[in-house]
Length: 287
Image (cartoon, rainbow, N blue to C red; front, side, top):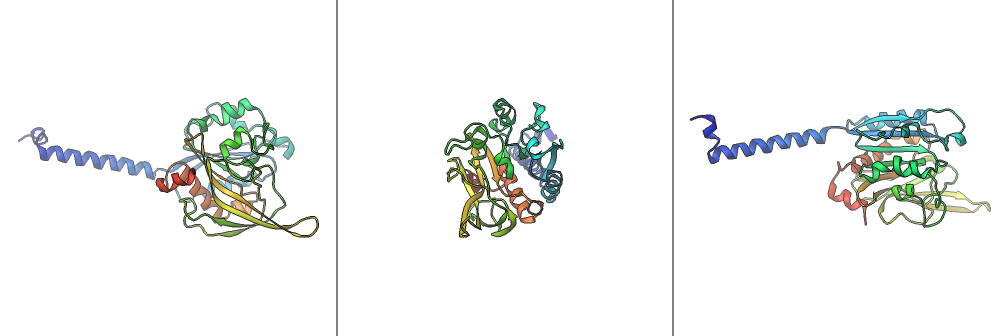
């Protein structure tokens, strides 16, 4: 009996089906084990990005699940000069190609070129490329409407939150939601002195869902206790299809290098590319 005739029989065809299935399983497993290719877009004013880029790359890559490439704009100048300058990476129209997710860690509030914002920076995300936005990234690209309650900007639609400012650096007491794969296993903790970004409109966009709250206690001008409680981490489903993870935490180097912070970011990145419990993660992105 030839091998060809053997595989024409029912038992042979069943064997072929098993082998094919095993092959597809192996390919799928290899794809799952392949590190996520993340591009860290970082730079601008008011932050120690020269050091934070290395802290983020080392910390996020440590587990072997995320491979971080850095796009750092090291232009010199004052914070005021840098916040109005678009990062150099955006000069390349194909800046995002080849990556699974983009981490936006820029501080460019004064960049207001809508053509650049819509057709270069946001375009890949409108097309479905997942995003992550850190700290001052939330205060970037302040085009018309950024400080009009309930209006916002194209960039704020992407992040899922309208935020316009922060108070003094004071420790933030963090409380995490417990029913989301991003926060699973994370324990509540208190940061060092950090900036608590406001929730200007009082809530997230309808496309977003909170992951963590931050509470800060300070003194007002009369010396009386003042307490602020804002959402500091959340997910957003941009334009109904693109996963975006955001956190306003991460001003100081000690926080950026904190294993708890890095774990939150790692979880958020993996969720953004669909590498967590998809049923739970999807529920965490929309109402």
